[in-house]
Image (cartoon, rainbow, N blue to C red; front, side, top):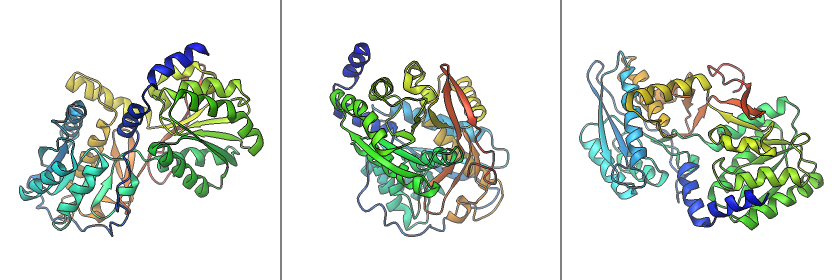
Length: 397
């Protein structure tokens, strides 16, 4: 236990740094006024058979995000290589990681003939980019996972907490889970996660038995973990849903201290809002055994990772798959040979698209829905409990 706290203390010594990293990896900050965005834009017309210019807005000159920008571009090119009947003219624009530059580059892309925009990376930049091209009918498919910015001509491709929570609690309800306690950090990602779980619980008939926040500090995490036994016994919750990112230093503390203080994984179902398979070091902690989390279709994601690595010589950044997905969707629509291929109605087709991690679709409110598998940890190995649906007509949706 002392070793766990020592390692965690080093990683959590700066709460501000943890929050900043979490915002990039987990979710964007809320954007003022982003909810009131109106209906879908119609979208531009294309000429079937002729090249379709697609603008990719990425933060190439932002030192903190340049490697991500590189992988986003490479993933888009990998998707283009798969296309047989779509002639895509990819134009890459550098946002420098700022909303103002994103807006300027979006306008430049529109002026230079782009028919749709992929990116930018962050929510604030995506909002500004979408505003300046809205009057020209261009749709923007951002890499953000912040649902509060979606709507109008702005779509989010990122994995949303609501989608993940709905998949896990939907599965849980079929396994007899009727109540859940939410354990969340009291920062922006934690609040987003809490709200997503509440929404998913309501949709799946699961009651919220208790909600326990904690501050981003060693003392705060440890105190909350020690107190969860009393929270569970007092509320009668059958499960505990942890919003914390699997790579966050708080996770080892939670998965060690909670089982030591009355939250037995044999009696209380642990759930995670992020992918625990990306942090296999967690599997050694007692709270990980039997826990549930969601992940993309394993065969699809492994295939994408392998192809990317073979083509570019490095493993793709976790966000690179979003660029592949966006470009794959554009290609699938352009291949149909319709002039209205990139309108809001076309982008939100019910059958969706096949992406790097399986099937996904864009919704009329600008958010997305993705096919996830429900996985667990058994003897330090990831085991699939319920496979990812292969279409939107199957179970799991």
